[in-house]
Image 1 (cartoon, one colour):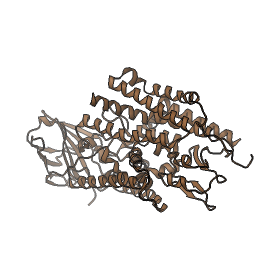
Image 2 (cartoon, one colour; image 1 turned 90 degrees about the vertical axis):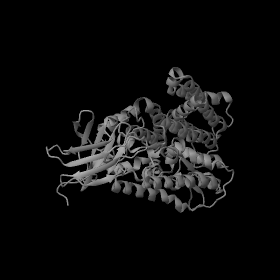
Image 3 (cartoon, chains in turn yellow, cyan; image 1 turned 135 degrees about the horizontal axis):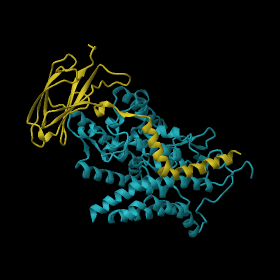
Image 4 (spheres, chains in turn blue, red; image 1 turned 120 degrees about the vertical axis):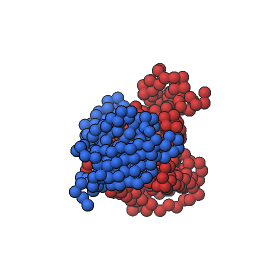
Length: 166
Length: 388
C-alpha cells in the first residue's frame, strides 16, 4: 500500500511542477498579497501623511516612523521628499508642520548644489521637542539622518524622538 | 529476491537512441511551451537565444537519459545558469541604472530585486509585525519584477518539488561555485572536518536573530558574497565601503578559492543560511538519494564526490546520505556498486531505481526549464543583442 501512495505522491509532484508556472504561482502570489504584508517603513519611509504645495515644487510629508520589531521604538524619523529637484532653488528654506497640528515643528534648510557629484547639506532647527537637531549634515544612511539627491527629488529623513520618551 | 536488493540497469544504459529521444520529447515540448513568447514574438536576438536554450536543455536532458548519469549533465546546465545569470542581471542593471550599485533613492522607492537567500531573515519580522525588512516591493512592479511575493512563491514551489535539490538545480549562485569547483580534476585539499557543516546553522541563527534585532537583512547587508556579481549599495559612506570589502573577500574565498582547492561547494556547504532551511525541506520532499547497506562496500567514492559533505558513515561502516543532500547525483554516479540510488520515499530497494530517477528528473527538469531555462534564455538574448 505504502509504495503505491509513494508513487502517487511522486506523480503529484510532477503534476505540481507542471502546474507551477501556469496556475500555482499566481495563486501563491495572490495568497501572499492577501497576507497584507508591507515593506518595513524603515526602508520605504512609511506612508505619506500629506503633501505641501509650494508653487514650483511639492513636499511629501510622511508619517513618523519609529522602527522596532515589536511596537514602536523611542527614536525614529520623518521622511520628506522635495520634488521636482529641478524646480528647487540652490538653497531651500522651509518651516514645516510635520504632524499636521497647525504648529511649525522645525525649520529646514537644504543646500542643493546643482553639480553632478555635488552633495546636498541638511540643517534642521527644531521648534518642537520631539524633533532632533541636525547641523550641516551630509550623512547618507537609512539608519540615521538622511539627505539623498535622487534623480528628480531630494529625500530627507529628519531624526525624531517619540513624544513622551526622554 | 525478497529482502535483497535487485540489480537493475540504470535508465539509459542499454536503451536505444530512439527510446531516449522519446523520453526527451516531453521536455522539448515543455521548453517550447515555456518559451513560446520569446520564440514567436521576440526580437531576433531573443528568438535565437530561445532556440539555443531549448536545444541546450533538450541536449542536457537527452544526455541524462542516454548515459544514465545525472551529475555531469546537470553540472553543465547548472554552471551555465550560474555564469549566465550575473551577465543578464548586471547588464539589466546597467541598462536601467547605468551602474551595479543601488542608490538609497532606489532602496526607498523599493526597487531592490528580492533574493531567495534573504528569505530566512524575513520570517520573524513578517510574523511579528507583518513587515518585510527588505528595500524591495511586495508585489512585482515594472521597475522591480523580482518582488518578494514572486520570489517567495517560486522558492516555495521549488522547495515542494525539489527539497534541497533547489541548491543544485535552481540556485544560480550555486552554479558559480560549482564552476570553480570543477576547474581541477583532483582537489588540493582533501580533508575537511564534517564539523564545518554545522556552520550554516550558526550563520542561520546569527542572521535571523541579527536581522530581527537590527531590522535589516543582516546577511544581505554584511555577509552575502554574491553581491559581488549582482548589486551592492552605492559606495557613499565608510560603512558601505566596509561592506563592499567584506563581501568581495568572502566571494573570493568561499566561491572562488576554496571550491577550486577542495572541489566542494564551500559557500553552500559551510556558509549559506538558506542551506539548512532547504535541508529541513528534504524531509517533506518525496524524492531522495539513499544508500543500500547491502551493496555498500565502504569505498568512500561517494564521500569524495559529494560537493556538500552530505555523506555520513553509519555504525557498520557503510555510507549513508544525510539531510544535507542536494540531489545533484554525484554520489550515485560515483558509486561502482550502484548502492546509492534515487528513491521515492516509502518504496523498498527491490523497486528498480530507473523509475524513481526518471520521475525525479522529470519533476526537476520541468522546474529547471521554467526557472533556470528562462534565466539562460534571457541572459543569452542580452549577450547576443550586445554582440550583434
